[in-house]
Length: 245
Image 1 (cartoon, helix red, strand yellow):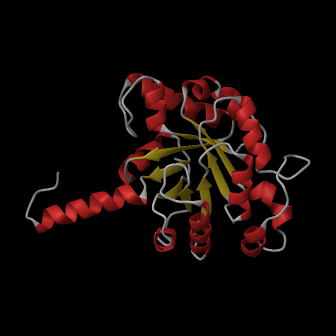
Image 2 (tube, helix red, strand yellow):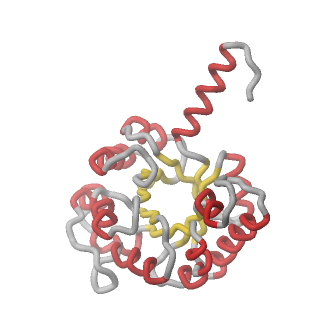
Image 3 (cartoon, rainbow, N blue to C red):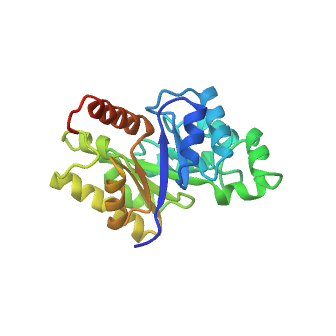
């Protein structure tokens, strides 16, 4: 099995939580601007906190918005996960927003990037920033081969719940519906065939390990919010003498 990168996932807008997760042994930490309770100003503080840990700071932006993608990079993100990529044109626009001319259209102004990345940030940015396009719709799934072939895109990230919804199924991170299983298998196999990374959100560490064995090279063992909720519930049940659910 190839070595798999493990990412923490932040849904709570807290610099302290960001620092804790960054020191937990993960390879990177993703600040979730799409579904997390986090705004841009809070994101900046969280990226600063992650920068003090061994983990690489990443951001999932809420949409394929060039201005917000550039701001996240300027704030010090070294990886961008972009949701709802449905076509080659959308994936191409996403990649362009992360690269400086002549390869892309990113505007120059890496405010925190220069502080965190150093004086050679501009020389290294295009080569070191990780770009992952989310596949979570029927259109994205249909175009996954062409999307994975795009120059400058490092990989795809499967949104299993949205993909399940798009295929008319109940949202779940670990569905055993044959149609969902086949769609996820297609994504990881196409990515690997194209020499690209394949990432996926998982429901637990054990689930993430299983996904790694399936060939995923980037796994998220749930969000800190979900893990906190489950851990607190387990401790409350223990305090009341109840068996775990």
